[in-house]
Amino acid sequence: MSTNPLVRTLRYLNWLCNPWHGLDAARIYELLATSSPTEHGLYLNLGFWQHANSVDLASDALAMRVAEAGRMDSDDRVLDCGFGFGDQDILWARRCRPRQIIGLNVTESQVALARRRVAEAGVADCVDLRHGSATDMPLPDASVDLVVALESAFHYRTREHFFREAWRVLRPGGRLATADIIPMPAATDRRMRRRQRISWGLVASKFAIPTENVYTQPGYRSALERSGFESIRIDSIREQVYAPLHHHLRAHPERLQRLHPIARLPARMTLGSRPESVYAGLDYIVAEATKPSTDTTAEGA
Image (cartoon, rainbow, N blue to C red; front, side):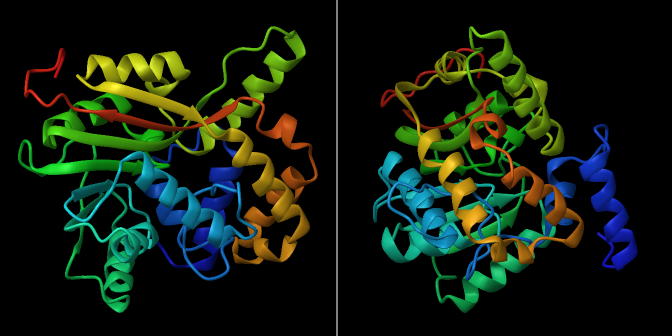
């Protein structure tokens, strides 16, 4: 993507102001680049704020929440789909010490920078980051123990294609863990339903969420079941994600300085609104599932 400041500004305006901006996930993240409100790292996730008091610590906590859901350990060969700038892989390599982490990411600039950061962190011997798709994984059948997708699966076209590919590359008894954004169930109150539609619509249009991925928790469970998974658990952690991040950034507006100047104004306007309205339509889940230990063919796989 062009580094010309004027071209970049025009592209930001198109993304933020045009509901039909036409950008797919890879081009959105090329545009966002390293504009993260973190202080030290380059995380792009929203964080898990149960015990955190900074964006960096909350982002680490979310990565560890996913690792715990997937029961990541030292014997695992892990596939990380949508690894961003590699922060989570560096963290997992140091804390969980899996045998290997393979990463797939469709945004080429993120892959290049993440590889450099992994090398600088001294974990390149166990972290192998690649340009590739989570819906067409360049890996053999039954070759990994754990597949993770930290705040990325809502982009995939489609999430169910990702689930089927995850099932294929997992060994029998392997696990899947995701942190994912899905819609809230429709409220009974008409005014709240309207807030939900606006809230979800803004996020879905700006971040290229395909309509095929728009379903609530029961639909998520059904998609996993159709892909062959069992022992499914889905936990909503939205109360430890959206509002705490909102309040933290409102209290620390200096964190917005890393955003592109064009993005700061809508960010400040959003922080001036009540989080109950801003995030009314958004659920945030951590899901875990297991491939059966007997390697049978999944329905629809």
